[in-house]
Image (cartoon, rainbow, N blue to C red; front, side):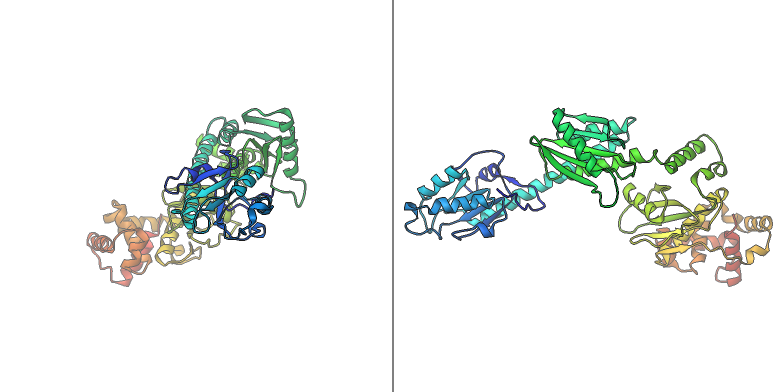
Length: 487
């Protein structure tokens, strides 16, 4: 019997369809195995439906194709054998308008070929049966999605435990009702969890793991097999260190591949991060920072002398950890921080950030580690300007200007004196800075600061009153802008 070319939805147990009281279906022949499933319903009145079946169908017929003398020959044997040869899962025979009862010879043939035969009463239409199949498939799909989602959450939680690798393997084994094993670069089983399996199954799984272990171009990243009725799967972990995840389970549910793939990604991170020099260096830098070392002392561990700070936001949805990591990968840096609705990425200056689909980016000037705080501020301002001007990416300019003609100490002293009346209210200084940077546009300032335009008007008017100046005067604006740009 050929394997059915199944659709991307879980199959429906035939027993579930028979349990539908609204259909009043009755099985009158063939095995009553609860494991019998159907993948779809198909109606055909062909005497030989074989060429039109993919396998796994509940074939529905009203017997229009049956000749008058069919009961005295081999017609029904030939008909049923062809359905079985095509991989049909069951046969539904509709009563009326052609036949008042199911032909006895058809019942005998279905028993002989072990094909479930379902009697469809006159009040039940074939379209109603097909609709019920799709409803059950939709329910099964929803249940499968819920199972996969719960498994993903439990695997992620296991990865955060003090013993992450054994915890992930244990959780994976529970979710697939089987056994999960991690093989090292030398092919030796490092850890395993779940239900025990016979020795020959363990050997077969270890051999399958060798199939996906990186050995050159063309090596598959995953492979499946069976051994003594046990379903086997192997996944090469993405760290590039030769680790392989093996899974042995008594059954292969549609969502099991997705669940195992999630576990493979987590194990790739767990086995790869500290196996690489860069991962160990980042870990060491973080520990030293937490223990009080200044940024300049640990920056060398990260492999770059000058850095860019990137702030990013997406208007589509609030970014999650997965989206933030993907953005960091696209920008060429694993140093990613997700805070509220803004993603911050620390990028080596040699990797020039490019616009990313779906993201709005603000990029700082290149700075040494001692300048990281000021670069963070630059990136935030650049992002605000990018959002206000609806640009995909805005960079903080490094071009020398008039401010470079004044010493830093004098510029800072002047700025503090000029802005003293509003310095105690950060909302006022930030609103004034944004409003001036956007040439006095109320609407664009409101967008950049995520406030109402009337709020912007009120704050700017308050600034004008406290400063005692005319903000419509371009000389005043220029002087204030100079002062607001000082640290």
